[in-house]
Length: 409
Image (tube, rainbow, N blue to C red; front, side, top):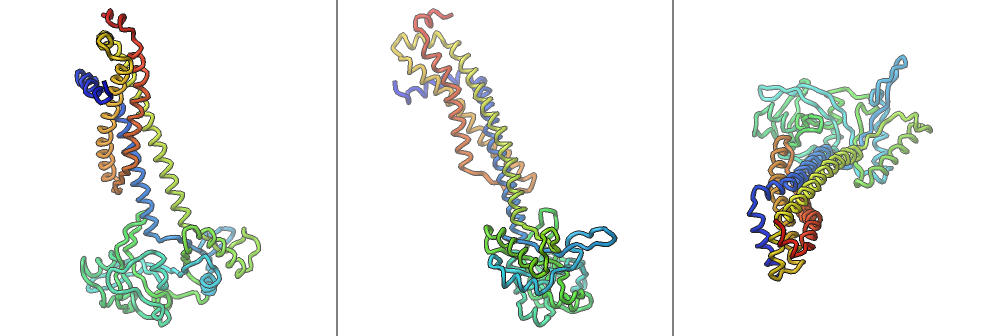
């Protein structure tokens, strides 16, 4: 008898007790379903974190001004203007790890359009800002450096601001809007970007040349930047080096010898993203580990039932051996039964886990990420559980004495 001839015999034995077989496989079903759903949800959460930080921009560092102090009370980073336009030019020219740098000054103001108005965030910046933030144009074009130098009254709108002013699906390009009674021409409409991890609507914005912002919307501080400097490193691996170069350049320019006395701050968004991803991966690994314990419990259940089955079928084993079956035939049959139970549970668990993952992804609004490698690994592990926990009952069945087995009542 070959191993292939053993499968039909093992399958018939399992089908004789359908309910018991299904309940035996239930532990493996729950274990595999837990592994699949938890890993899928973890991958979806990781993809959501990646997309959220990608929306902020790639390889970003935010350089902020220093802290004000009044009566011993510190105002916090950014409350004392310390960054200058010369600092910005020095960062662009003297830091090899920096690819791009742009100022960002903000205020909130009402934009008046075609018979409608909308309070939104107004940003003054330079053309590098759009590349740093990974922002693409939907219609029209970005403003250029020549328009910044000329103080042109042009404006680029986010989707939300454009919809509120002109209505959904309207084309705002070439239209005139007013900000603080100053007319601006809409030259660009940004692609939709969505929300930040904290619920901020990125698309509720309007962006103008920084020179126009200072001259027409909010007065500037002459040589100081009344906002932050956004810096983009040449690559993700260069962010740490860029951070160090920024600190060295600004300390030299601001005549600071002690790092504890820095009058500026640097936030590394890449490190924030990495920390959040590591936290998500740790949680996913923890949940997957708990799910693996369920698989092991299911394996113990299979072993218990197979031992009961050996006892119940002792006489059957004796008859098979009496008519010529070898010990390895008996061992193979019980091992195949254990593996079949485990694989059946694995396949049912795969379907159940995918369904649970889809339901949870829909509930949380996350992308469903099902990794085929994880699915194959879970099925393979369930088969291994069947082999490991079915081996002892199979060996016990193979070692039965045929004569004693025939006498068994």
